[in-house]
Image (cartoon, rainbow, N blue to C red; front, side, top):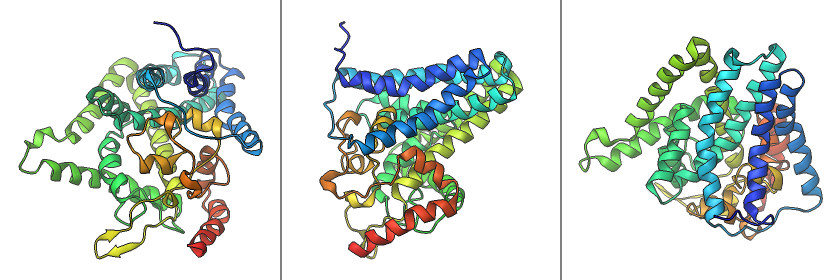
Length: 350
């Protein structure tokens, strides 16, 4: 099978998503200053490239999806498990990392799992085929967040930008308050939806939550056997880091945006104005166009390359790229200073 030509968009997505992983692996092996290169790449270099591209007016329309771009998501999904195993190996003493190098690699790998593995799994659980969906769910299970495969599709896509969605943040709600509410809320809401779907139709053991919880326990046992107690602790810390990244993404992309209530239990249809978009192309390529969030909600089955930025120009835009805004959300006063005036202008214009 011939490789796609150099101008094919799959190379852009692959370069953006794989380059930080390659640098992180090199840094974990070499240690010293090299350990910081991957972290700097996925943070400062990425932010600078996004800012430059925004000033140059880069962004643009969606791209055609084909076998190659579809295969990239599958390949990244499989690669996730190898990189996760290597990260645990390196961070549990398998390579010669000093304290500074350990911190840099831990932060860098956690960001990659949150900003690349998460969008990859998200893309896969929206595929039509059984095996891509299972692979995406397995990626989430490996990060102890398997329930997201159900809750995201069955709860978030139905109730986003309403009080019935645990993963939509209200105006003025700080991230840490959101985190405490959203994690258990999403878990329970997804379980209720899965149980209701199977009530009287399928046996209880067919509920995928058994696979999510059981799979998480299986990962814990396997990691303990392969990497020992320290490896288990490292994995749990990486899972927490990646889960925070996922919840930051949800927090940022729907903060303060609400669908109007049109009945006692009904809301207006979801529109582009109910999700924040980020028109920054470099991080969008790394995250498989996840920052083009409004179009994804309008067309959940649309392949990631074809997602459009700000459909009909109605989706509000974040002032900085999604990773930068996620970082700002960790400091609630800074976040409110950046976002609340924009939110007030949006609501005044409705």
